[in-house]
Length: 177
Image: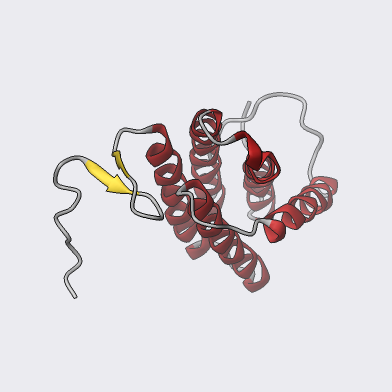
């Protein structure tokens, strides 16, 4: 089977169910940004030494594929992503207890894992903005899933920020303010 279909040569792409949209449509931008985030998380995983953390991030990649399906109008069960929000908060709280209190903005640099975590965080924030714009045009009847996706992305970016700080601490990297 060929990887190319030529169906997008006119600047359109298909949603689940076959509806075609411009590749510049906010819906396409939203799930394209989430797709980019999954790739950045894959790069981040290369620099994480802890096998459990790698597995956790790989699970996030799977969550993001479910979210992309939802954004492409596929029937989607986001109950696992809804549960994951509380897990993100617990992980953020646990990691934060080991870190110095945050009193100022920090520069996004340091260890390689920290830098990739910051890159993932910024892509996540951009994805979140694209999703919010896209969901403004979404059917009002799907508010529960819409809310889940926005909160999931918001909390994921918080987790990635906390990871960046924790990865630097693990490598004893101090960031100058």
